[in-house]
Length: 147
Image (tube, one colour):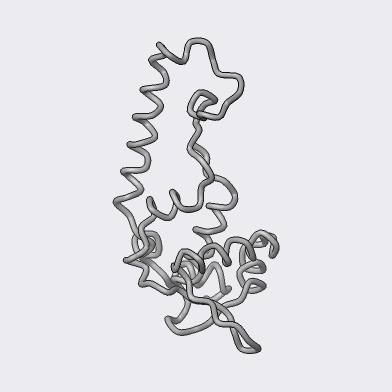
């Protein structure tokens, strides 16, 4: 299973916000610079995370965004389900596939891959953003060049 760049950037954004001072607002440029990633991609990510209610966005001259929930209330499995477009590990998982594989009706691999996908998501369901950022000072040292 490979996560999309969109999910990767969503996770990185949340990690960044989780290690900031609790009430401090952040902006897209700040995260873009810290990670060396595209502002355009981050704008879409931040907008979506705001629509999901995971981050709070404040408009205006002194605006920005911050976590809307505590890190321990942000489940990683749920987040990945909300940011990934699909979980079609193989072609036959896509019901809209115009060219289905001829062995799909009897293929044993399909069942194994579905089971593996469920196990993958079940493991991620056991973790929260707080589990990722257990040592915020280490993240701050890397992200903000603090010593």
